[in-house]
Amino acid sequence: MTTPRIEVDLSKIRHNTRCLVGRLKSRGINVTAVTKAVCGHPDIAIAMLDGGATGLADSRITNTRRLRDAGIKCPITMIRPPMLSQVDQIVQNCETSYNTEIDVIARLAAARRTKAVHNIILMVEMGDMREGIMPKDLEAIALQVLKMPGVALQGIGANFACLSGTVPDAATMAAFSALSHEIEVACGHALVTVSGGNSANLPWALGPRPTDRINDLRLGEAILLGVDPVSGDQIDGLYTDAFTLIAEVIETKVKPEPTHPSFVGPPLTASNILPDHDHGARSILSIGKQDTDIAGLTMPAGVTLVGATSDHLVVQTNQSQLCVGNELEFQLNYSALMRAMSAPDTAKVLHNEKQLPEPGPARRSNPCLELV
Ligand SMILES: *Cc1c(COP(=O)(O)O)cnc(C)c1O
Image (cartoon, rainbow, N blue to C red; front, top):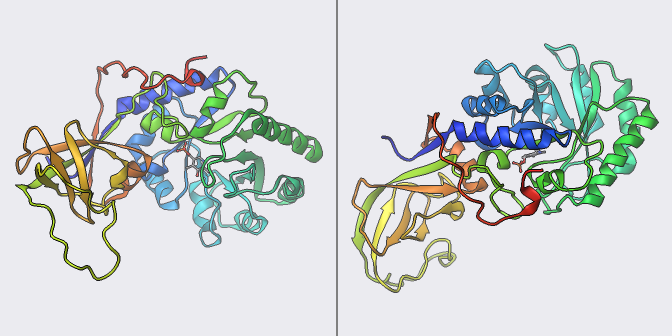
């Protein structure tokens, strides 16, 4: 079969979504499934919807268009604040968008549309210091949005653990919940959606504290990779191997210690080459930095990463030698997954296993993430 390829087990994605939807439902929280890491792949999106996600969200208009072109009719939310240059495409493809700039909202309100109104969720800055309106400015902006024809104030949202790694703790989430109450009272307008954050919010959402007004989470990584992005731990009962990257061996040789010519430019860094003292056989795989985040790959047992360049991945094997044409399988973290899914030379091969093995036992138990 063609390589490199990424094999996707849709049943595992459906299972992961269904587990998370079930656990969060008992806490009064809906799941909006985020498709950006898989470039809006329609079959993966459908697996998420089959697993019970109430809608889809993505950060790029090209991905949302791909979902629509595949005939997906569910609500789609743009989670990155829209570019002014894309407002027409936003209102044509997305029912809802997350916003922080009143000028953009005004342009969304005036944009050429296919749907009657476009829904606005105001993103609030709660500590991550990426996108968001400062809480003190929220009421004034909400009041302005309410006066604009063409848009409806759907709710508010927060985001955590992206830019500065701020983890959503109980106090911050309680403050965000209280803020939604204040806005409703001050504006005399009920907020339909109070979106608490992303996969990093799961320990809080499934923990003992009340979830109050928060009724939505936007989940990508937890569904796709079955892990808590903050700790890296497997989420109890979820599959961490829905995606496998497969690359092919193009050379195997025993090589001597590299000679040390003088380089023009910066010296080779650890990410380019690792010291190789035991002179095992080295193999080259036809995949490289252009195809994925090499540092985010898990090497198969008995295989050590030596280094990588744009198009070559060099590994060392100590026991059995790899032959030209052999395939090696790698598990991926979020960064490696995102880049592999967007690499044009990597085939995306979908499976739909009927009989799934039990998800492996939790690698490390995190009581917060167990069933409530
Ligand atoms: C990427 C993103 C998400 C999803 O994050 P995961 O960690 O993959 O769950 C949610 N909200 C916003 C605004 C995002 O940019």
